[in-house]
Image (cartoon, rainbow, N blue to C red; front, side, top):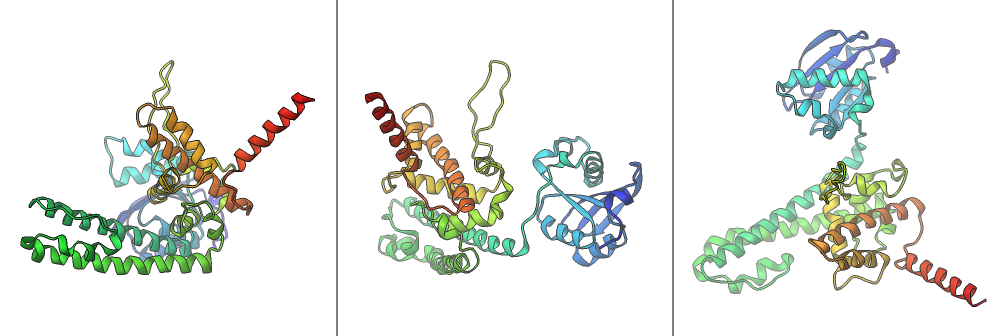
Length: 365
């Protein structure tokens, strides 16, 4: 580590990360340009370049390279601010946008007030590795779905139709239904689906093993019926530390499950959710909510909450109910993780009934 702090040296560096080259903009303590240039985006080059600087404040933007670059810069003794791109409108809405301007704005905003960057913390390397495993599985599943749709659409185009089949055995079940004129053409697609099924099964086994060995808290998160090992592990990996949220309700906003606001005067239109945060986890929670609201969902406070919203009617009532259940489910999972308590499906209902009984007894007296 360097023997001087970023504030003592007074240097602020904006680093616009690129795939091959990154642009840097160095400001002195007085805010004057001290240096600008380009550097190759490799571990060796960045380490050599930033080891030559005294301990400084370095601002970078979230991106593909930002996790390993932020770790490398911290190892070089620098204070690293990873900017949230949703808060950097002065860069994205700039009519003269280029790498040099981006680096300059990062440096000047970091020097003026780092809070304006809404800096984030990247996950640990081990967490990132396990999260990659989940994202790879998701990519395989989505690819399989696209290939299955290719088969179904191809058969329909010649007047045929395939029976319903589970994706795990689709390549076997539809063989008898394939039109003779398309068997040869669709054979490679069915082979690919079979291969994907094998790889997805391997990923599912890895998810179970990692959950059991590395993240035993996921077992507690799987108590609500409809939440499986994949969703529980993704929840733990993406949030990483439950204590980072002051309130459990903040988790819903973090995952983009709260409505957007555009209120002005008497106008307060109903808008969709923000869709901020991790897309994969949000999709998994919505899938769980659909199960909870579906025919196999158990009686629970979550289901009752969704049914009340759906009963109001109106446009997209059922869709809004599912999203509301997904948001409430994220709060429940966070509380289970943080408190270590057992899940009670009808906890709020039981409390409400107890209060009503108490009021009835009091009124009789």
